[in-house]
Length: 88
Image (cartoon, rainbow, N blue to C red):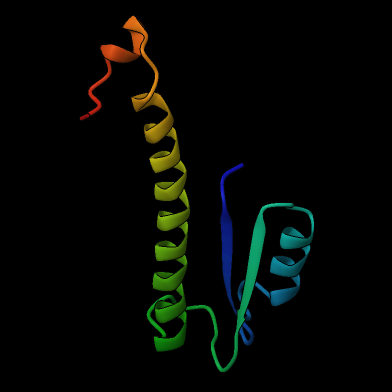
C-alpha cells in the first residue's frame, strides 16, 4: 500500500474538510491532517509547511522500505539478482 497524507485547511470553502474526512475514512493507509487557521491555498504558510512535512514523511517511509528490500537482495546469491545494479 502506498502511504497517503491529506493536508486539509479547516476553512477551505472549495474542498470542504468533510470531503477529506470521508476520503480518509475509506482509505486504510491514509493520514488526515486538518490545518487550523487555513483555507484552500497551498501557498498559505501553515498549509505549505504541512505539505512539506507530508512529502518528507512519505519519502522516508518509501526510502526505508526500499532500503530493507535492497539489504535483502544484496544478501541473495542468484544470477537474476547479480545482474541488478546493487552496490555491495
